[in-house]
Image (cartoon, rainbow, N blue to C red; front, top):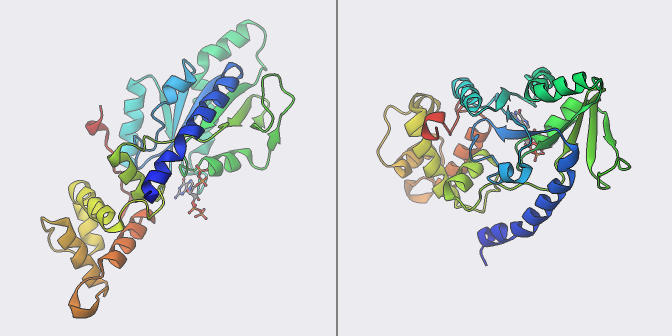
Length: 289
Ligand code: G4P
Protein backbone atom coordinates (compact mmCIF):
# COMPACT_ATOMS: atom_id res chain seq x y z
CA UNK A 1 0.00 0.00 0.00
CA UNK A 2 1.40 3.43 -0.89
CA UNK A 3 1.93 6.02 1.85
CA UNK A 4 -0.77 8.12 0.18
CA UNK A 5 -3.30 5.31 0.58
CA UNK A 6 -2.33 4.80 4.22
CA UNK A 7 -2.73 8.50 4.81
CA UNK A 8 -6.24 8.52 3.37
CA UNK A 9 -7.38 5.32 5.07
CA UNK A 10 -6.27 6.58 8.43
CA UNK A 11 -9.04 9.14 8.58
CA UNK A 12 -12.56 7.62 8.49
CA UNK A 13 -12.44 6.36 12.09
CA UNK A 14 -11.31 9.77 13.28
CA UNK A 15 -14.09 11.45 11.33
CA UNK A 16 -16.76 9.36 13.03
CA UNK A 17 -15.22 9.98 16.44
CA UNK A 18 -14.91 13.73 15.91
CA UNK A 19 -18.48 13.99 14.63
CA UNK A 20 -19.73 12.20 17.72
CA UNK A 21 -17.64 14.28 20.11
CA UNK A 22 -18.72 17.55 18.53
CA UNK A 23 -22.36 16.44 18.60
CA UNK A 24 -21.96 15.87 22.35
CA UNK A 25 -20.75 19.40 23.06
CA UNK A 26 -22.98 21.23 20.56
CA UNK A 27 -25.78 21.82 23.08
CA UNK A 28 -23.47 23.75 25.41
CA UNK A 29 -21.64 25.95 22.92
CA UNK A 30 -22.94 29.22 21.47
CA UNK A 31 -20.80 29.57 18.36
CA UNK A 32 -17.94 28.09 16.37
CA UNK A 33 -14.71 29.87 15.38
CA UNK A 34 -13.09 28.16 12.42
CA UNK A 35 -9.41 28.85 11.87
CA UNK A 36 -8.25 28.64 8.27
CA UNK A 37 -4.96 29.33 6.51
CA UNK A 38 -5.39 32.74 4.85
CA UNK A 39 -3.25 31.60 1.90
CA UNK A 40 -5.66 28.76 1.07
CA UNK A 41 -8.95 29.60 2.80
CA UNK A 42 -10.90 27.02 0.79
CA UNK A 43 -8.56 24.03 0.93
CA UNK A 44 -7.82 24.52 4.64
CA UNK A 45 -11.49 24.28 5.62
CA UNK A 46 -13.27 21.19 6.82
CA UNK A 47 -15.79 20.27 4.09
CA UNK A 48 -18.37 18.89 6.53
CA UNK A 49 -18.25 21.55 9.22
CA UNK A 50 -21.59 23.18 8.45
CA UNK A 51 -23.28 19.82 8.51
CA UNK A 52 -21.57 18.89 11.80
CA UNK A 53 -22.29 22.12 13.68
CA UNK A 54 -25.87 22.39 12.38
CA UNK A 55 -27.21 25.92 12.86
CA UNK A 56 -24.58 27.22 15.31
CA UNK A 57 -23.33 30.69 14.37
CA UNK A 58 -19.93 30.48 12.65
CA UNK A 59 -17.06 32.96 12.46
CA UNK A 60 -13.86 32.57 10.45
CA UNK A 61 -10.34 33.47 11.58
CA UNK A 62 -7.97 33.87 8.63
CA UNK A 63 -4.71 32.90 10.29
CA UNK A 64 -1.16 33.23 8.98
CA UNK A 65 -2.28 36.46 7.34
CA UNK A 66 1.35 37.61 7.66
CA UNK A 67 2.13 35.20 4.82
CA UNK A 68 -0.98 35.82 2.69
CA UNK A 69 -1.59 38.57 0.14
CA UNK A 70 -3.37 41.31 2.16
CA UNK A 71 -5.53 42.29 -0.84
CA UNK A 72 -6.84 38.75 -1.20
CA UNK A 73 -7.42 38.41 2.55
CA UNK A 74 -9.51 41.60 2.51
CA UNK A 75 -11.52 40.23 -0.40
CA UNK A 76 -12.20 36.97 1.43
CA UNK A 77 -13.48 38.91 4.42
CA UNK A 78 -15.87 40.84 2.16
CA UNK A 79 -16.97 37.60 0.55
CA UNK A 80 -17.73 35.90 3.90
CA UNK A 81 -19.74 38.97 4.85
CA UNK A 82 -21.98 38.38 1.83
CA UNK A 83 -22.50 34.86 3.21
CA UNK A 84 -23.51 36.27 6.61
CA UNK A 85 -20.23 35.18 8.24
CA UNK A 86 -17.98 37.55 10.17
CA UNK A 87 -14.26 37.01 9.57
CA UNK A 88 -11.02 38.62 10.74
CA UNK A 89 -7.38 38.31 9.69
CA UNK A 90 -5.03 37.14 12.44
CA UNK A 91 -1.35 36.38 12.77
CA UNK A 92 -0.82 34.09 15.70
CA UNK A 93 2.93 34.15 15.30
CA UNK A 94 3.05 37.78 16.47
CA UNK A 95 -0.44 38.09 17.94
CA UNK A 96 -1.52 40.69 15.38
CA UNK A 97 -5.30 40.92 14.99
CA UNK A 98 -6.05 38.83 18.06
CA UNK A 99 -7.39 41.85 19.92
CA UNK A 100 -10.33 41.80 17.48
CA UNK A 101 -11.36 38.32 18.49
CA UNK A 102 -13.66 39.30 21.37
CA UNK A 103 -15.38 41.84 19.14
CA UNK A 104 -16.06 39.33 16.39
CA UNK A 105 -17.52 36.93 18.97
CA UNK A 106 -19.81 39.67 20.28
CA UNK A 107 -20.85 40.67 16.76
CA UNK A 108 -21.53 37.07 15.78
CA UNK A 109 -23.55 36.49 18.96
CA UNK A 110 -25.30 39.87 19.03
CA UNK A 111 -28.77 38.32 19.25
CA UNK A 112 -27.77 35.94 22.00
CA UNK A 113 -26.24 38.76 24.06
CA UNK A 114 -29.39 40.79 23.56
CA UNK A 115 -31.58 37.94 24.75
CA UNK A 116 -29.31 37.40 27.80
CA UNK A 117 -29.72 41.09 28.64
CA UNK A 118 -33.50 40.89 28.30
CA UNK A 119 -33.60 37.87 30.59
CA UNK A 120 -31.36 39.53 33.20
CA UNK A 121 -28.51 37.13 32.40
CA UNK A 122 -26.10 39.75 31.08
CA UNK A 123 -23.05 38.23 32.81
CA UNK A 124 -23.46 34.73 31.36
CA UNK A 125 -20.26 33.76 29.53
CA UNK A 126 -20.30 33.01 25.83
CA UNK A 127 -18.89 29.64 24.86
CA UNK A 128 -17.09 29.31 21.57
CA UNK A 129 -15.69 26.10 20.09
CA UNK A 130 -12.45 26.63 18.16
CA UNK A 131 -11.98 24.30 15.19
CA UNK A 132 -9.49 23.90 12.39
CA UNK A 133 -7.73 21.24 10.36
CA UNK A 134 -4.20 20.29 11.37
CA UNK A 135 -1.49 22.92 10.93
CA UNK A 136 -3.73 25.98 10.51
CA UNK A 137 -2.34 27.26 13.83
CA UNK A 138 -5.10 26.27 16.25
CA UNK A 139 -2.73 25.45 19.13
CA UNK A 140 -0.79 28.64 18.59
CA UNK A 141 -4.06 30.60 18.58
CA UNK A 142 -5.34 29.02 21.78
CA UNK A 143 -2.03 29.41 23.58
CA UNK A 144 -1.75 33.05 22.61
CA UNK A 145 -5.30 34.00 23.41
CA UNK A 146 -5.33 32.06 26.66
CA UNK A 147 -2.08 33.54 27.88
CA UNK A 148 -1.57 30.69 30.30
CA UNK A 149 -5.16 30.39 31.50
CA UNK A 150 -5.88 26.98 29.99
CA UNK A 151 -8.21 25.14 32.36
CA UNK A 152 -9.99 21.86 32.36
CA UNK A 153 -13.64 21.93 33.36
CA UNK A 154 -14.42 18.28 33.59
CA UNK A 155 -17.28 18.51 36.03
CA UNK A 156 -19.40 20.82 33.90
CA UNK A 157 -22.70 19.21 32.83
CA UNK A 158 -22.53 17.79 29.34
CA UNK A 159 -18.76 18.08 29.15
CA UNK A 160 -16.83 14.94 28.48
CA UNK A 161 -13.69 14.38 30.51
CA UNK A 162 -10.64 15.65 28.77
CA UNK A 163 -12.26 18.46 26.82
CA UNK A 164 -10.07 21.51 26.86
CA UNK A 165 -11.80 24.64 28.06
CA UNK A 166 -10.00 27.95 28.17
CA UNK A 167 -11.40 30.82 30.15
CA UNK A 168 -10.51 34.08 28.42
CA UNK A 169 -12.36 36.33 30.82
CA UNK A 170 -15.64 36.34 32.74
CA UNK A 171 -17.55 36.70 29.49
CA UNK A 172 -15.80 34.30 27.16
CA UNK A 173 -14.86 30.63 27.31
CA UNK A 174 -13.24 28.68 24.50
CA UNK A 175 -13.40 24.97 23.83
CA UNK A 176 -10.63 23.35 21.80
CA UNK A 177 -12.07 20.97 19.14
CA UNK A 178 -12.89 17.68 20.74
CA UNK A 179 -11.22 15.54 18.06
CA UNK A 180 -9.34 15.96 14.81
CA UNK A 181 -10.84 17.76 11.84
CA UNK A 182 -9.97 16.71 8.30
CA UNK A 183 -9.63 18.63 5.03
CA UNK A 184 -11.29 17.55 1.77
CA UNK A 185 -8.32 15.28 1.20
CA UNK A 186 -9.93 13.23 -1.56
CA UNK A 187 -9.73 16.32 -3.79
CA UNK A 188 -6.34 16.36 -5.54
CA UNK A 189 -6.19 20.17 -5.77
CA UNK A 190 -6.86 20.48 -2.06
CA UNK A 191 -4.18 17.90 -1.21
CA UNK A 192 -1.74 19.72 -3.48
CA UNK A 193 -2.37 23.13 -1.89
CA UNK A 194 -2.08 21.73 1.61
CA UNK A 195 1.23 20.21 0.55
CA UNK A 196 2.45 23.57 -0.85
CA UNK A 197 1.96 25.12 2.58
CA UNK A 198 3.51 22.17 4.41
CA UNK A 199 0.24 21.04 6.01
CA UNK A 200 0.55 17.68 4.26
CA UNK A 201 3.90 16.05 4.92
CA UNK A 202 6.40 15.89 2.08
CA UNK A 203 6.72 12.35 0.80
CA UNK A 204 2.98 11.87 0.34
CA UNK A 205 2.97 13.68 -2.99
CA UNK A 206 5.85 13.61 -5.49
CA UNK A 207 8.08 16.56 -4.66
CA UNK A 208 9.02 17.44 -8.24
CA UNK A 209 5.43 17.28 -9.38
CA UNK A 210 4.50 19.47 -6.44
CA UNK A 211 7.19 22.04 -7.30
CA UNK A 212 6.05 22.11 -10.94
CA UNK A 213 2.45 22.65 -9.85
CA UNK A 214 3.52 25.41 -7.48
CA UNK A 215 5.35 27.09 -10.36
CA UNK A 216 2.16 26.79 -12.47
CA UNK A 217 0.31 28.64 -9.70
CA UNK A 218 2.97 31.30 -9.16
CA UNK A 219 3.29 31.95 -12.90
CA UNK A 220 -0.40 32.58 -13.16
CA UNK A 221 -1.02 34.59 -10.00
CA UNK A 222 2.24 36.25 -8.94
CA UNK A 223 4.56 36.33 -11.98
CA UNK A 224 6.39 39.49 -10.89
CA UNK A 225 7.23 38.27 -7.37
CA UNK A 226 8.27 34.91 -8.75
CA UNK A 227 10.49 36.36 -11.48
CA UNK A 228 12.07 38.80 -9.05
CA UNK A 229 12.89 36.13 -6.46
CA UNK A 230 14.65 33.86 -8.97
CA UNK A 231 15.99 36.56 -11.20
CA UNK A 232 14.14 35.26 -14.25
CA UNK A 233 14.02 37.50 -17.32
CA UNK A 234 11.03 35.63 -18.74
CA UNK A 235 8.73 32.77 -17.87
CA UNK A 236 9.03 29.73 -20.06
CA UNK A 237 5.89 27.86 -21.01
CA UNK A 238 6.97 24.60 -19.38
CA UNK A 239 7.16 24.84 -15.59
CA UNK A 240 9.62 21.95 -15.43
CA UNK A 241 12.03 23.97 -17.58
CA UNK A 242 11.62 26.85 -15.13
CA UNK A 243 12.39 24.52 -12.21
CA UNK A 244 15.59 23.44 -14.01
CA UNK A 245 16.56 27.06 -14.65
CA UNK A 246 16.00 28.03 -11.01
CA UNK A 247 18.04 25.06 -9.77
CA UNK A 248 20.88 25.91 -12.12
CA UNK A 249 20.93 29.50 -10.92
CA UNK A 250 21.34 28.21 -7.36
CA UNK A 251 24.18 25.89 -8.37
CA UNK A 252 22.13 22.71 -7.92
CA UNK A 253 23.80 20.82 -10.73
CA UNK A 254 24.59 17.14 -10.95
CA UNK A 255 27.08 15.33 -13.14
CA UNK A 256 26.62 16.13 -16.81
CA UNK A 257 25.45 19.65 -16.05
CA UNK A 258 21.84 18.71 -15.37
CA UNK A 259 19.83 20.32 -12.59
CA UNK A 260 19.26 18.36 -9.41
CA UNK A 261 15.51 18.88 -9.67
CA UNK A 262 14.74 17.11 -6.40
CA UNK A 263 16.93 19.56 -4.48
CA UNK A 264 15.60 22.47 -6.51
CA UNK A 265 12.02 21.38 -5.71
CA UNK A 266 12.73 21.15 -1.99
CA UNK A 267 14.33 24.60 -2.08
CA UNK A 268 11.39 26.15 -3.93
CA UNK A 269 8.82 24.66 -1.55
CA UNK A 270 10.84 25.71 1.48
CA UNK A 271 11.08 29.26 0.15
CA UNK A 272 7.36 29.41 -0.54
CA UNK A 273 6.57 28.11 2.96
CA UNK A 274 8.87 30.65 4.55
CA UNK A 275 7.37 33.48 2.57
CA UNK A 276 10.65 34.25 0.78
CA UNK A 277 8.91 34.67 -2.57
CA UNK A 278 6.43 37.11 -1.08
CA UNK A 279 3.02 37.20 0.53
CA UNK A 280 1.18 34.82 -1.71
CA UNK A 281 -2.43 33.65 -1.59
CA UNK A 282 -3.14 30.63 -3.73
CA UNK A 283 -6.93 30.85 -3.56
CA UNK A 284 -8.85 33.86 -4.79
CA UNK A 285 -12.46 34.74 -4.20
CA UNK A 286 -13.25 35.13 -7.91
CA UNK A 287 -12.53 31.46 -8.51
CA UNK A 288 -15.13 30.38 -5.96
CA UNK A 289 -17.82 33.03 -5.64
P1 G4P B 1 -2.32 23.27 14.69
O1 G4P B 1 -2.50 23.28 16.18
O2 G4P B 1 -3.49 23.86 13.99
O3 G4P B 1 -1.95 21.95 14.13
O4 G4P B 1 -1.12 24.24 14.32
P2 G4P B 1 0.05 24.87 15.20
O5 G4P B 1 -0.50 25.84 16.18
O6 G4P B 1 0.91 23.79 15.72
O7 G4P B 1 0.84 25.70 14.09
C1 G4P B 1 1.41 25.07 12.94
C2 G4P B 1 2.58 25.90 12.46
O8 G4P B 1 2.10 27.17 12.00
C3 G4P B 1 3.62 26.23 13.53
O9 G4P B 1 4.86 26.27 12.87
C4 G4P B 1 3.24 27.62 13.97
O10 G4P B 1 4.30 28.35 14.53
C5 G4P B 1 2.81 28.22 12.64
N1 G4P B 1 1.89 29.36 12.78
C6 G4P B 1 0.75 29.41 13.50
N2 G4P B 1 0.15 30.59 13.35
C7 G4P B 1 0.92 31.32 12.50
C8 G4P B 1 0.81 32.63 11.92
O11 G4P B 1 -0.14 33.38 12.14
N3 G4P B 1 1.81 33.00 11.08
C9 G4P B 1 2.85 32.20 10.78
N4 G4P B 1 3.79 32.67 9.94
N5 G4P B 1 2.99 30.96 11.29
C10 G4P B 1 2.04 30.53 12.13
P3 G4P B 1 5.92 25.14 12.97
O12 G4P B 1 6.89 25.34 11.87
O13 G4P B 1 5.23 23.82 13.06
O14 G4P B 1 6.58 25.39 14.32
P4 G4P B 1 7.46 26.68 14.75
O15 G4P B 1 7.99 27.32 13.52
O16 G4P B 1 6.55 27.59 15.51
O17 G4P B 1 8.49 26.05 15.61
